[in-house]
Length: 345
Image 1 (cartoon, helix red, strand yellow):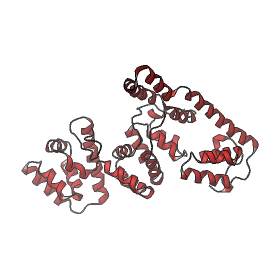
Image 2 (image 1 turned 60 degrees about the vertical axis):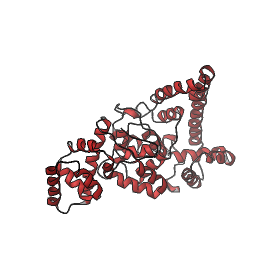
Image 3 (image 1 turned 180 degrees about the horizontal axis):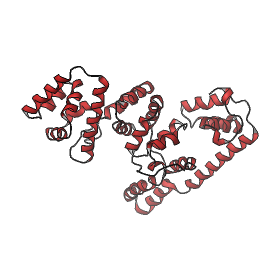
Image 4 (image 1 turned 60 degrees about the horizontal axis):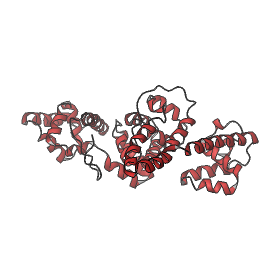
């Protein structure tokens, strides 16, 4: 954003997050601004600094409006801080003891989380995309990390790849978020009334959450988004990739599971998918077919001849969706390949 386009008058609702923060810092002075900067990420510091540098003057009425909005949010935070999860945990520790208090809080925490972002967790993906357009990537990440994984995957799949990669990176780096923070985000979006309600909040942050989300994308989208994440942080992207279940991971399915999967996949679709796999996977699949079915599959692959990479990737995606559905239904067990998880269902 250039100096020519930086708002210096108008309403807070017309401003971006960095612009509001810049005006707040300018109003509070250098010492207070330095303390605010300590709470921001390097990217956020750069964005706010750019806004401050390009905004030499702000009209008094706009500055007062931004300060009023900040004060209102602070009052809400102060009010909830007197209660909240921390206070509840402290009371339970003193009443029930640490072990019993922990068990109770785990049940209560799930219920508390389900009360936040009430509208958004039930919004149709296309509506969510419209609502989130223009929001800061960190806000989008916070919201998507607490939506149904299939809903979040659809939203990510409709985003521009660079933005989607940025959002997924932030989800992967996200730690636990307090219910109070979720409530503040919900309040900030409470004026959005065009939401159709469906679904639940089930996804948490971290690399595993991003891997699960990408596993629900289709049409090779996951490859594009992983590449965008690699550009941002190779180490985080590698952690996500290691936790994903891709077509080649069918080698990890036992014979019984492979046979169950084969009953759900069309022969021509399987032949197309096997055009670009390792010899080990091909042998694993054919060894779990009858001799006649295996010969027919090899003949179908030969008949296909040269195929486009994107067609093979699309077949991989469709077949993985079938595998995932069987896993979620409990008909097969899918090994995650992660160090901390024995299986995922």
